[in-house]
Amino acid sequence: MPPLDLLAPEPVSTDPTKRIFTWEEPWGQGVLRLKWDADSAEVLEAEYRLEARRQPSPSEVREFWGEVKRRVAELGTLPVEGADPVPRGST
Image 1: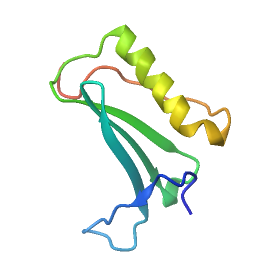
Image 2 (image 1 turned 180 degrees about the vertical axis):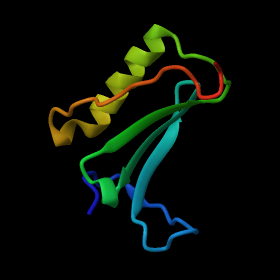
Image 3 (image 1 turned 30 degrees about the horizontal axis):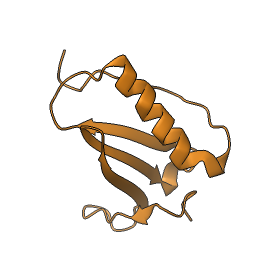
């Protein structure tokens, strides 16, 4: 079972045995997305997908992490293993 009730199954058409659970909603100028893969149960991914391909401002990054913390608060304190505020393909 996923670690948060808000996560819903997301079918993987190329591998029906894969168990991925996601949640997303419009947030800020993009979409806030959480993803959990049962095969990597110790990792919960958080992503801020911006509508425009641009680097988020420092205040947007702080607000993003604040919203993520609010959404996952029931899990307690979690380590952050990595963060990349630069959009892929922009370098």
